[in-house]
Amino acid sequence: MIIEKLKSKRDGLELELAIAEPKGEPIGIVQLVHGMSEHKERYYDFMNYLAQNGYICVIHDHRGHGASVKDPSHLGYFYTDDSSVIVDDVFQITEHLENKYPSLKIFIFSHSMGTLVSRNYLKEYEDHIDRIVLCGPPTENKFAGFAIFLTKISSIFHGKYKPNRFLNALSLGTYSKGFDGAADWVCANPDTIEAYKQDPLCGFTFTTNGFLNLFKLLKTAYEPRDWQPKNKNLPIFLIAGEDDPVIQGKEKFKGLERFLNSLGYNNIKSKLYKGMRHEILNEKDKEIIYEDVLNFLQADNISQN
Image (cartoon, rainbow, N blue to C red; front, top):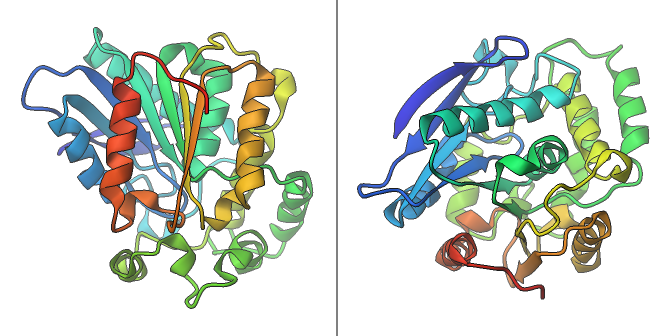
């Protein structure tokens, strides 16, 4: 992996990114946008697979995650209450890639919270990418606005960098319902769960500021009034595990597809994977997802389900 650092154009925060390049002539670029309370290194295996198939792969640590913090104690703190900043961070990486590899098309693969960032990215920068994967996407929550209100109230009682366990229980507390362990909703693969629990850069609790950004991203991802698609034929691939609590069930998952259709996007494919949970890239049968994503990237066109 090639490690680079970029300073955010919005506030100067140093963002760390990793690049995997194929041995032969590259055929495209996959920009990865990771999820909540994790880090870029967890995607290296998937990136190496795509690189072996001809794609340059690039991922950065979101602000407040991994190496994109001013101090290790700042995990879960975004350094701003403006949720557009994390979206612009992703676009800054896109611009960096456009300058570095000007002849190649850029595709986005996003996971979980990363899909919220990416959906907001589509509102502003859709014309810079050629297709997008939304993996384990949080579905609509009508209480996002109320959650923002609660978060602002909660900030009175919580320190700047202090993990907010109240908001964590409010937003993620129900995910473990029906599973044996508190983190078992993440993946059905016990090896993944053990590694996740042992990793200090995974599963940390967001600060109040982090949750404010999260809830804002969730709310704006479902606001159609400021969303005017420029490329209604943009290929979109929605994927998730059938047992992923983040998607809130099959109907909510299909509801996301209907929402994107209502905006005008007409080139959407979706798939749920039986027996899999939230992190389908880390399940025992992950090669199935690897291959499906590769086929999506390589396809000349996408057919609706």
